[in-house]
Each structure stands twice: as C-alpha cells, then as structure tokens.
Image (cartoon, rainbow, N blue to C red):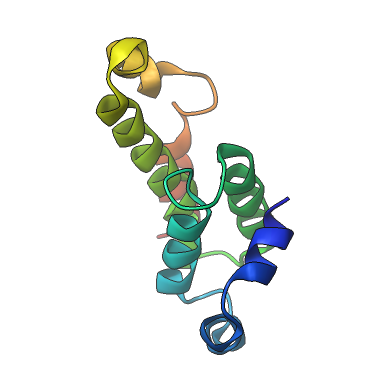
Length: 110
C-alpha cells in the first residue's frame, strides 16, 4: 500500500533523496511523516515502509532507529487521541512487537 502513497509524493522531492542512498536518515523521517495517519497515510502503510527499510538497510546506518522512531510517534498519537487509547498508552512499551525496539536499534547502529 505504501508504494502507492510514495508514488503520490512529489517527484521533485522524492528523486534527490532516493539518489542519496540508505544512509540518509532525514529522508526516511520525512517519508515517515508523510505516511503517518495524521497526513494521508495509514498505520499499515507506515509499518510496510518501516519493514521495507529495515529489510534492505546495511548495518550501522541511522535508519536502524526508524522502527523506534515510528513507535515513539505512535505512542504520542495514542496519548494525544484521548479516550481509551490514551489510557492504554502506558502499556505501549510492554507490547511484544514494541518492547525489543530499543535493543534492536542499539544492535544495528553502533
């Protein structure tokens, strides 16, 4: 799904960043923001993008922190949403898919 959204991203902003390679964390963060549910993306598109980046990134690049960054942003979205999502945000960091993110970031980015 995220490939469709990335195709909608303005070409003049997409091409130069893509040419810089996987070591450019700023481009990844901008795409993360573009794919977030607050803009025109979705949680599924965000997860697909993060999974694709992690699967293809070399060792020792700043993109190693991308899953952790996405999770921190999700935590803040949950807090800001109010209601039951905000009440359950305290359990965010103990979820099985979230708990190991900090260790994984340390292991992939020295």
